Length: 561
Image 1: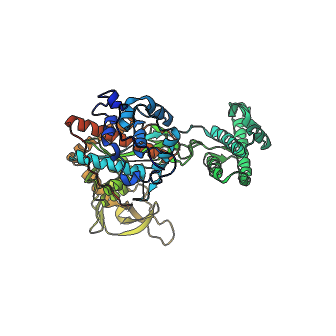
Image 2: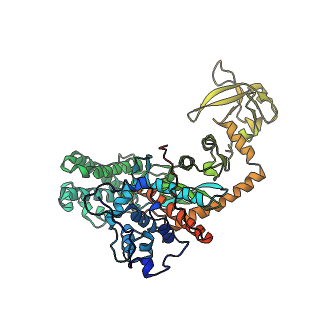
Image 3: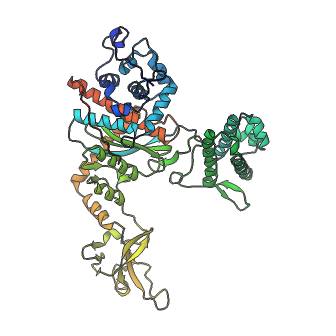
């Protein structure tokens, strides 16, 4: 369809009505300066820009500006952003709209955001990621400087409602029945009666179950009844899925799968054969659903005391300029290492030069160091802590290992070259052994091997002394611990605390709370927030220098890697 054209200037332009309405150094001013150059031409051509027939559509430039202005004041809904664009002259001037014209509808913005999430055929990347790369290239061309790169993560609360196990099953089943009734054009109340789950028609799920919730045996019985009702109704509706139009079946199957996963993860069988709620000590380490309406959200932990439910936002940025080069959102229970590696790969693919990286102990594992080192980047992060065993005073880190000669020396000064390959946590590692007679006569025996056996465990088996199992990457681990004793390295690491302002800037623009369901929408939000934060930073920089923005096109990374 043809696109609307607002290039012609008139008396109704906001800047004509109110001169100086755009304050230099602000995000709206920056968007007006960039104009059509924010969205690459090859990308803009993919947005409804090919056909000459049909009604005029909104240009990608205006919709992209609206998606960024939406996060100017900490975030708002799509409908709220569209309504503000109708009356706010500053926003209309930023988007290049005259004061007397219409504004995009919420449905159009929703379709444009779905288009941004899709991968472009040009370089096989999500379109929002291409726009972020363009802004990063623009920032680096306008503000070249020596950079100090840092990675960190922060919680991102999910958009879906958080419930306990009973409410997850009850509200989830109620939502499934109501959705089924809506797509089949039947009564939800009548459908609940036909499925023999009349308690779904009550105003409250717990009230409809009608028990004394202080009675433990009654709670166990009603949870069992609730779980079996869910299993029965899900099985019956799945067998009748042919009654539903094909385009509605995916959502129904997803809700059924979410309910079955709640039963699988949260319930266990007791001695009476009932399904009861399982007691888990570490919810943040389990892959359990915390929201039926947002089934991709998980329980996570920023620290031992700070727990959250939702997603985890990872950020790669520069401490000197405040540039945010790459972001990603993963499930709340995911580790920090793999998302951090992905951010580094994106930055390297963009041509960003990263020689050293500051990160906290969550990124300092041996496996993470090896991955980062393979990219040609030196990681500045605390190494893994020494694990102290209660039954042995002389720990592994007190033993000297000569990796070239394949020799281990104990704290008593006794060396051994006797070693073998054993299995440890599913990996093949090296184990050094000392003779039984040597350890039995050693003066450090009580601190090293207090449970040393005087005879063999089995007939014909020789007794053994101290055995030392090394880490799969023991040499890398010891090198990191040795380097960490350098005061200069620790002094450099102290600058990592400055990276909190990068996280604070993302939160200021609205990255703490997801505004839509699912990981795809959360990643779109995080990238739009990063683009808006970078452009606001660049606007302030250019306003201070009183310099115009470059008009020549900037190169973009075209590789699909």
